[in-house]
Image: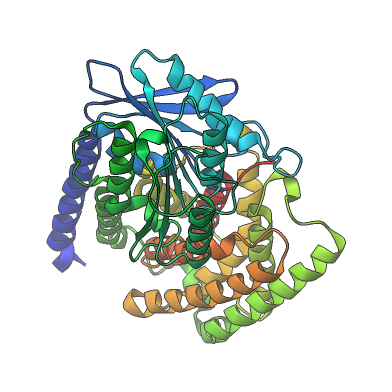
Length: 495
């Protein structure tokens, strides 16, 4: 190891410098834009104020299901840097908003949240009240359309991204742009239907009847939020509707710097962990003779466990209503599926070594690395990462449910390091994607997972890369369970 010490220390130094550069560039992208955290009528709103001397146009940006104001921040910064005041609300049940989601009994609550953010813009002296617009994504697209129809005197343009079904007409809402990614078939079809209902392509922006559909190539439901083509198209539409000259803005680079930061943290961890991880750990020596029996055929075991978990969850759903279990949507079903899959996996013969007190310390360190890599800077760019107090009780419950599966996965990777271990981890991830996809299609309340399923490899690859060098199943399992539990705690709406 001493022979490679200079290389490891050099890689660590480069990683630290890259991390510092990423932070510097993310913070630099926000210079000239003031961010205020406000609350109006119970709706948390982040207000982005550009550096302008006179009242500026204003836009309310509404996120989609399982999103937050942070998810729209990347897009919002483009508008703010072009001189537009942007209001980013957390819709009911989402993010910091403590009002429960209740769309079964109150389908108008989201458009009311949008109107509340619009009223906040109208109360601000920095905003030009004659030039206001609404922009929404997915669930937020419907809320923006509905609010725009009700506020024709205030709102002169609406941009609806990845919309579902809504009520539109030839002149309501005013100046409607529909947008969808080329890779999100149902939403693109819905946008085309709405365009027909709204009178088709064309119209006069001065009369409020302009309509158009913009298709973003090579974009799916989440990726469209980070495409500069989409940002620029929305900005041009607002400028046309307002009959204003708005300067072109260069692409927002913050997501790329966040990705560089994530990579730098992984490089730093990979360079330093061999200096502290002792492979002569008694737990590893103790399980070595029968290691192959305990970890063989991991892909088959993962597949059988996923199928068993899906069948068991279907059976549980016949007895207990799973949708909204525990007061939160999707997260409990997914965590329960992982718990069942993990228990099946362990029952099939996968056996972790005996835990040691040092595993707790290693697990905390690994979780800290995951937080640093993924969430700390991500909270400045696109993630609602820090849970408000009313969400914290879900964190330990979800973490404990995920632990059996995370422990089984970490055990299956024991002894398989480097490319071999990561390749096996990706193989198990793909198996998990397929089995989770099947569960999402047949289990009540899990359908939304089909939309975000492409994110699963990213969410699993990161803890795999962190846990593999240490080769401590209990530590890696604890870190992975806490990381996924944290994500599920923040992501899905409360009811």
